Image 1 (cartoon, rainbow, N blue to C red):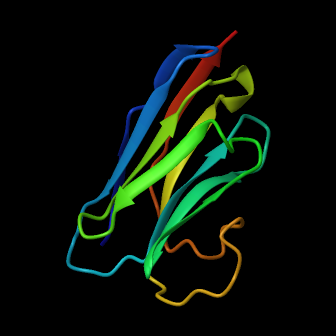
Image 2: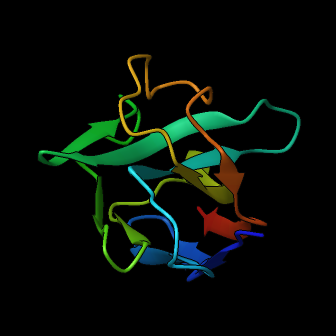
Amino acid sequence: QVQLVESGGGLVQAGGSLRLSCAASRRTFSIYAMGWFRQAPGKEREFVAAIRWIVGASSYYADSVKGRFTISGDNAKKTVYLQMNSLKPEDTAVYYCAASNVQYYSGSYYQNHWVAYWGQGTQVTVSS
């Protein structure tokens, strides 16, 4: 059983920064993409950012976080990070780590069809 363990959530004032981390509990399997989704109260889970390792690394961002959030990771260590700067109250949500074991996924990373594994979620609260 693969588990994704997140850390780094918390409470921060608007304009502040947080860094989320996620690590897979098992490293004896292949992962080709990892990323983050978030879900605010009363809303659907939405894409935040993803990183794909095929030839080098490619990253994808939701328009709402582009320029403020940076995704990075290590394929060999099965880890992914989300550096969140200039946080806004509307970034408040439970953030979920996601991972894929599909090597040549041809669909969109902006939706959740590529996700094979989910983390348990970590709360991020941004106060105004």
